[in-house]
Image (cartoon, rainbow, N blue to C red; front, side, top):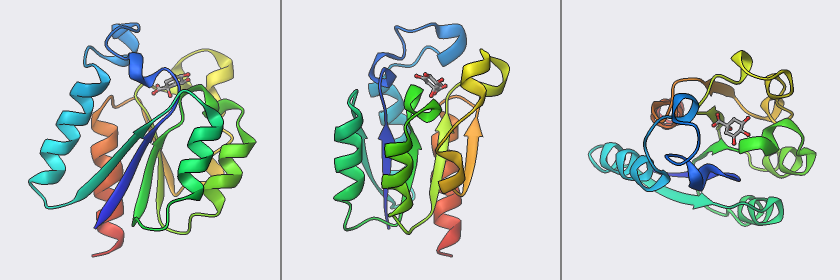
Length: 142
Ligand code: DQA
């Protein structure tokens, strides 16, 4: 089983961003925790992070393998119809993750334009949200 964990803009900066919102772990530390968890369960996880909308779209379009996507689109969640359309073409299970609870924050964050092409949304559970997303995808193939 291979699952793609995709992170959008500014997620490479967590640890330096407001820790009361995004937690204290760096992006590399989050990746390590996910790897540790998935390695022990023999799940292959491929990581991709980009600050550029087109690169994220290219990555999704070029996925010719993979059993599922866990995506934290960062601020693109709130306005990228292009990422919405790219995700729509990927037929496997898709989970949208946000480190913070986007419903508890500024009004503009409470709307995600990509949720309707995802199976579900996990928001506000910090880095553990990625693990829950992966677990859900694993469950879909059991
Ligand atoms: C985020 C929430 C977004 O609103 C924000 O723009 C981010 C991170 C989160 O993980 O909580 O960059 O996706």
